[in-house]
Length: 227
Length: 227
Image (cartoon, rainbow over all chains, first blue to last red):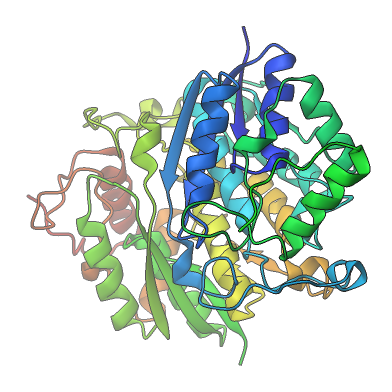
């Protein structure tokens, strides 16, 4: 049985990604990060999701991105609310965390190397991607190329490491439909950038809006608990 | 004045690298990592070096690589001693930390993005590289390509990010000669994988041996304090 490392945030996309990796027959090692995010309730969600979907292990790594400042998700900057779709689509939003996916994937790579895994799953998406540069196909391909030169398994032992981004070309509605077929309980996930301390979603940030639209487009009742 | 981020470990190579970045006219932001290393005295050395060479800022980021285990530098595995040169040259040693340079460079990339820097310096070296896969020219080139797709500055604003590895093709003796010309005080640096708690070097690990040979080859008295 092959092992895959799966980046798990507690959100809708990464939960679907974990279900896809399981369905593909991998032993799954989920990894989440305590990175100084304001919405730490997402770690509780990640733990619920890992358990419900039967991840073989779930590891939380501590990294401090607050030293860098520069993002509404880690610094004391207001999360934008009730933006129109065309506003969301223009430019990189303040909620972008500098180099976050690069850092998360580097840790996933370390875990993969230690565990002898040659597959990494990340739930990035180029359709409803909120303007983050590190969610695009070119970035994923370039990280995979780099990873194949970075590790002992790849560089010395000649093994090929694959970075899977199965949601890349799906709409949010397609992601939800895929996850429901694989048994994902989206009521366990949280996508909000600005949730209440007890884990209710604000309903107004970009992420809440994209998520709600996804359920509407999929014709599925939105299971999200809103504040 | 352009800004560069410089990875600074407290060792001989990265100190030289910082001096080279200063000499090239960059405003320098040094970054070091508290990553669960057994030889934490290297962080004290990094602070001394940053101060002595006049880094404009020195930041220490906390990251926990111990969750991964798998290396003599972070786990409870004995550091190999008194290995012959051909032994050092065969294969990846146990002191290799999985994906370490990938992780360190990812943090440097985040800092560069927040600070508007387009230059990152890393003191890796393909000649006396101790068999680490993530010290080779191909790896550096692949990381640079990935970085140019990962950040807002590069991906959206079209700015070119450069990853400098000025020591790549130098011998240890050449590195030392270069640093001395630029005013590096190597007595402030520490390279040992297994130093005493007060910062004396063991003299027997691969790193101590390569370093001592470098001073000998350069015809310079070795300023290292040995246990």
